[in-house]
Length: 256
Image 1 (cartoon, rainbow, N blue to C red):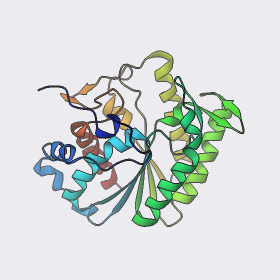
Image 2: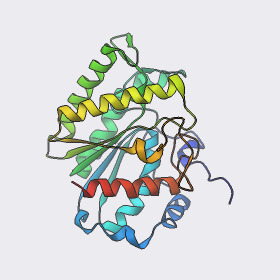
Image 3: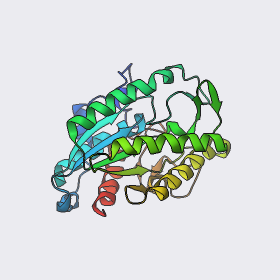
Image 4: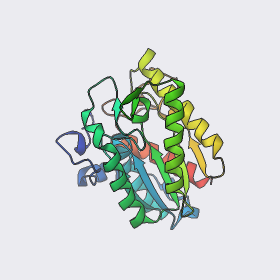
């Protein structure tokens, strides 16, 4: 078969809120389902809110499709081009639009949270790997200042996300395919912060190891894993890849 097409939100000029998957993408995801995808009956009625950036947005088609099999209710609070707490960043590419991320993320997540009243919040965001800006000063990835500021921001977000009793599942972030050396190191630094954050909040936060699923040999990560192309452009998941990750994530959620 030919190469899998890019998700719809990557082919034009999308709004910053993650759009609903297209009918074609939903059909492609449905074609990946197997009878065993109905086995997690204990999750029936649970409400899940997905938050994060465009990589999380690309997972929504798989998670939504699988959710219908097990009775999960999935809401989408992801924002294209923004991390959950990264706000303004200074990455390898110019990111002037990130100056608006704080307001955009607050608006989208706030509205989704109020509407969905989640039992579980799933956080999947790679933008926090980049250097962040605090009061006009750039905090470089890997420095003690960067690490401390991220932990403060994540702790503040945790209070808002779990105030009504929801638990938080944070996905470790695999480097984009082909990334090696210093660029892959940014993701490793972020994942180390995510683990520290979870360790400090073990009663409310769990880290689910997406890195090991998507990049089993370690960086540079392959595009195909166990015969499936997971990330169609090296960063974002196509319908087939989103179902693979969604299936794994539902297993993780079923563990409590």
